Image 1 (cartoon, one colour):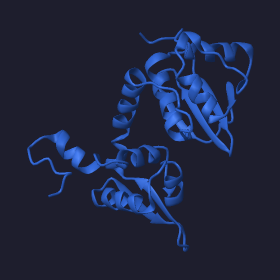
Image 2: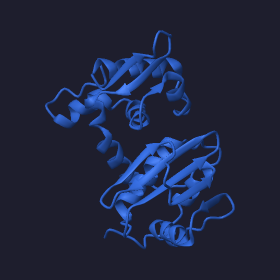
Image 3: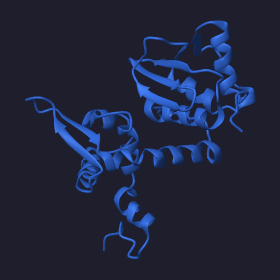
Length: 218
């Protein structure tokens, strides 16, 4: 018997039959910021085996959630979300927000910290807790050329991979240090030696106000 099948009518059950397996939503999560190769996905999913990743990708492709394309004439394959897969972005963010509000813990000893889930958590936290008085662009620079941009356009927050030309604040940090900062109670958040902000005093002050909850939407 297929344990993925719930055998009763429910739209949530139908959805879980497609993306409810272990790893499936995490694969979707890592593709929300753009296409990735098999090796990229494997690198960002701790302890997943190549066989399991292959199986999950095939299931998601068969269900119309993921598509794959070859790059040029080479053998390199890139995986991306279909329109149906992209519609899962709010689900990924809602589950991340639930984790932020109800299961927030700092990284455990020896637990790897990856950039995409950490930055999705950052964006989701800001979306719920911060409304700056003007548009801002903040760039995070992690080791190994992992760069991410979070923008507030005056209405909503958006996250993307890569840098930006006009930047208000640059955050230079290790992933572990930023994860610890993000999981510290907001009133106690201090930068420490492993998180450095580059920007004017007004811009960095606004940044810290946002992450201490002083610009709360509530």
